[in-house]
Image 1 (cartoon, rainbow, N blue to C red):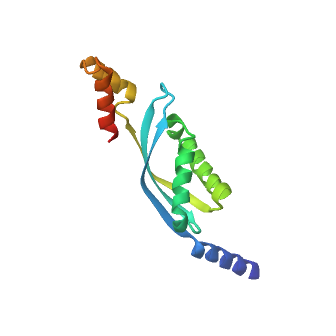
Image 2 (cartoon, rainbow, N blue to C red):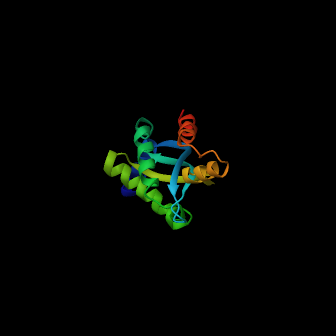
Image 3 (cartoon, rainbow, N blue to C red):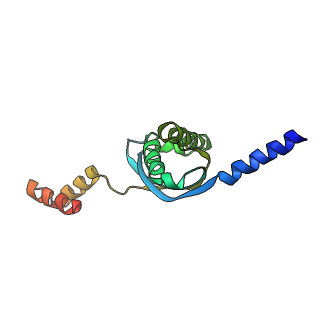
Length: 145
């Protein structure tokens, strides 16, 4: 009986110390195996753990590092999503000593990137804009501003 009470008290204390942290509309570009093209991914997730809010910048860093280690196709499957969450949790704990007890994926959206640089150059050439290298440089300088 005392073991049950003690176990219940420990479980209650564990949940009482946990906090919730939400990441909304996190965006990243990741590679697809389909021709190594970049795709834009938007995700939202909820994390439960300790000291998450004060380590938000570490969570953002970990998200950037871990998501870039996956191909887009790996994240399509349930197994791939679970592997992503597990990798994120392990990285946070090993690199930053931040414990995420649970990670819930709330949103996972893939948005195709309309043009990459090579496609943009080809489109400019088709319009006759790339006859002189200075014109191309002006176009790219304008885009970078």
